[in-house]
Every structure is written in C-alpha cells, then in structure tokens.
Image (cartoon, rainbow, N blue to C red; front, top):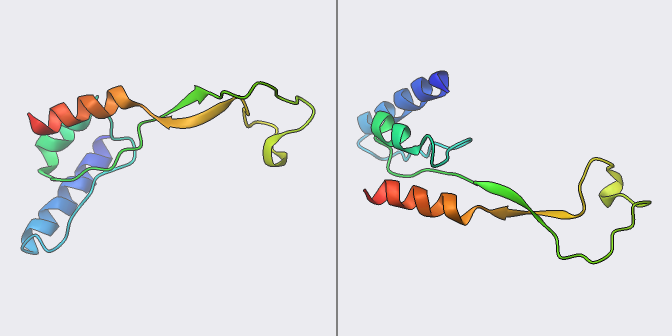
Length: 96
C-alpha cells in the first residue's frame, strides 16, 4: 500500500501543477479502512471503490452437474453486490 500511496501522491502533485486540468481518481482497494489516509496524503477529491461483497442468490435450485460458463470454481449460489455499510462509512469520511 505504501508504494501505491507514493505513486498516487506524485500523480496528484502532477495534476495540481497542471492547474487541476487533470483529475486523479485513486482506486483499487479503496475502502472505509484506508480512505481517510488516502484523503489526507493525496488531497484527491474523487475516489473509486467497488466495495463488492458476495451475497447468497435467491435461486431455489442449483444443478451441481452443470457449472456456470463451464467454470468449475464459480459459486452459482452467490452474486456480486455492493456493501452499503462500507459506502455509508466512506461518505461520512468524505463529508467530515
């Protein structure tokens, strides 16, 4: 994470030197646990975060003899969703 922050800080400084004509949006692994540090160290104004979680599907029947897309390691009983609690905590951090 330290190397990512160093690169990010350099990028934000470059954007500032370009009269803020460039928007740097830190992402990849941004969550409620590291957002405050990113805000303080980068001075960035926008952030990207998927904060994805895997939730149980509402499917009632799963055929164990057929795999989704022919890939055996995909759990068909789950789907990707957004962690609403993480989003709410990040909004609170950003709004102060």
